[in-house]
Length: 256
Image (tube, rainbow, N blue to C red; front, side, top):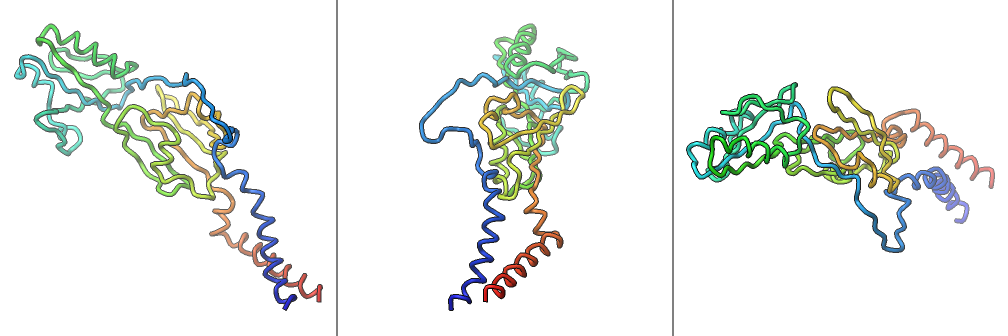
């Protein structure tokens, strides 16, 4: 009876030895002291700025609704779907490659490089010439991030506000699979005609102070799968498992 138990015991021991070494790469933020509370100042956040290819939703109201209504075209003229209401008319202005939009009465206006707060106030000042007590609301309609690779739900995710972080985007994608490499995540970002490839390490708390912690519109997060993921579909790694089983059998026979 004792000899019959040796085979599964040895097989389990081999699998344990080959797998336990990779667990240290699984937990997030390993250098955070989880035994005591701690805090740190947030000084790496910068407000989102408008970029070419953004679609701006602009709503204008004033004491003269008929005069301000020319700014508030239906959204379906831009996106193909009507998502406006009588209380919240929205227009989609596509920012061209020069960073400009064309506004009624105002004409071509440079918007790239401004935050939505700055842009709202600047447009409001320009409209004082035409409207009485104008109120301007602005948001970016096509703010989205993509998460691909070894995650539960890869896809493109729309962002409703102007603030999203790397952990939040990964959470939208259902978190990394257990086989995803947490210390080898790639952030791909396009800014002002250049493309950046930024390595991200999710196992370190340095992520929280990184200038890339807060995502920008059209950012792409790629999670590289580990060798264990590849092993599930590759015959070479399957043969290694068979070889380990065969070795365990030989060991049992030799012990007899």
